[in-house]
Length: 409
Image 1 (cartoon, rainbow, N blue to C red):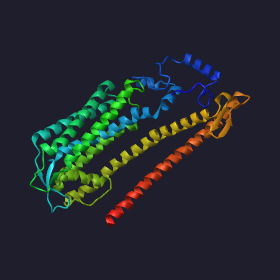
Image 2 (tube, rainbow, N blue to C red):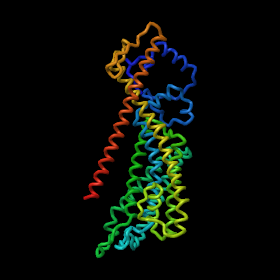
Image 3 (cartoon, rainbow, N blue to C red):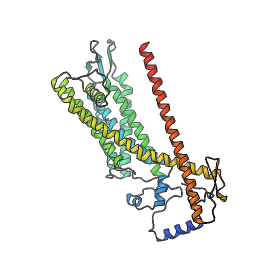
């Protein structure tokens, strides 16, 4: 991170002559490390061993790197690892049943008779799924350090681009190449058609995000190795296991209750997320006996994933944002004052003098000033959180009020 030359206060981000001399002495005795850009960015293609052997000052520079680098290097791959398997699940759902359906007017769940899809449509859908699964495997291999970046990243990005464009193209040509019967007003496209649209859109979006990550590696802003913790790496595996559990449970209930596969998947998801619309319920004794173990096992999966996401937000994103707020407040406090004269202005109005007759007294004053800066940044952080919570509450309240007016009208 670049710091202007006049920001020389030692504790507030700069350095005195004595501090610079001590750091030069330490650097001579320290083993030689790869050179780093002055802005604190990670070295291009930095290895895990090099990252582990960094000094404290270098780690602080990495941690205080701009938030956009954190998003590109950590957040985007994490989102891709979580939503990539979900897109593949949607792709499977797009193949599970035919795309066209003649709705039975007497069915409360809008079920009916399916119209078989052309063979070429099913074959192209399967090709898209196979390519996407290979891309998911490549990303999983990169996250577990089994595949190198220059091998896994192109496979993942290109594979998802191909699958996404295939799915979007299939959905676009369906009205002309796989039309609905014109002589039947009850004919409509089934859930599988819309799942194909969802999977294609997610594939393309994730490919764009990983392309941005690869661009950051190419220009040398950060390492080619994902700096992901064990919890972050396990999130993708937990998501894959949960989605496999949903598909397997859906297949069982489709067999036991005689439902369409996608209706069974819909029932499983509604149950596991404790929504419970009530439009589907098991009627056979076998289905009812399987309900309790299925729901308990699935809810445990959901709880583990939610707990993992919560820990990631608290341990990574929240701490990162808080640190950046402190750094921004420190920068503004020094800039608003007169650093050449040892004057700092906290919040732009609180005048603080860091001059002292001795080095120890000066450092003590700077320590107190930094405490004030941290307290001010923490207050701003709480205000931001309160504003976001209030905004979310107002949006939810307005939405519920509109729903009540709609129902009463």
